[in-house]
Image 1 (spheres, helix red, strand yellow):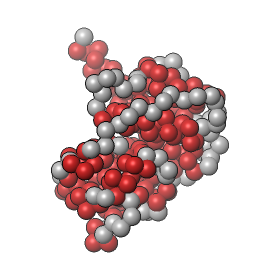
Image 2 (cartoon, rainbow, N blue to C red):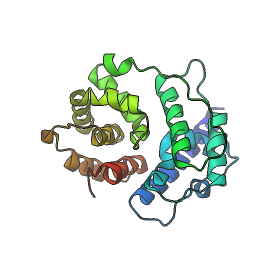
Image 3 (cartoon, one colour):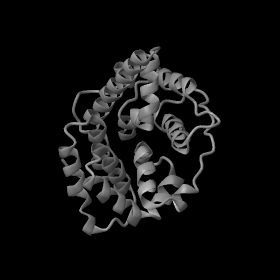
Image 4 (cartoon, one colour):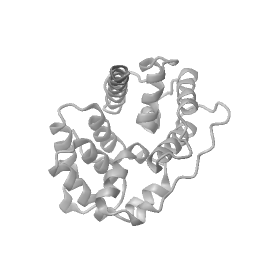
Length: 232
């Protein structure tokens, strides 16, 4: 049982990395045309779980105006949303991530009927969380930093720019490259980031030091492509 679970976790990590790499290449203008359905087996449970892990980022290249994959991509996303909805005891991060994927589907995929309703997601933590916890949650929700998504979340984080900047610096010092990249991506979206933070150079540094982590590369590429921060 434990061996099977470990194998499933390893398989999920591999698929997540493959899709993240494909998105990063598309945002960097490399790798040819992008189609989510070309990266995944539509009826594979691990592939659908990977869509939920990456959330709205699986559709990030379409936010650039690139032609979406159409029907096959829509089917993949619909199956992922149906297979892994947030339960009654789901974390706030899980609910926000689900909301973000639904929002991205409506915004970036062709109209194809109704999408699931977006569940209510708690937002009190945006005001009450201490800055290390705030940074942790924000980094987990970095996929929602795509243009136009989650305006309430973006506004809440903008109100705590200084705390998010502190968290970014802390993550870099702790060599937590994924958390640093996620926090840095939000900082790229919010206004009034202190010049003293050195965000552009920081994002370049985080991407370089991550050792080629595809999810770090995705966040850095998104910050550069959508918000002109952290150029390669």
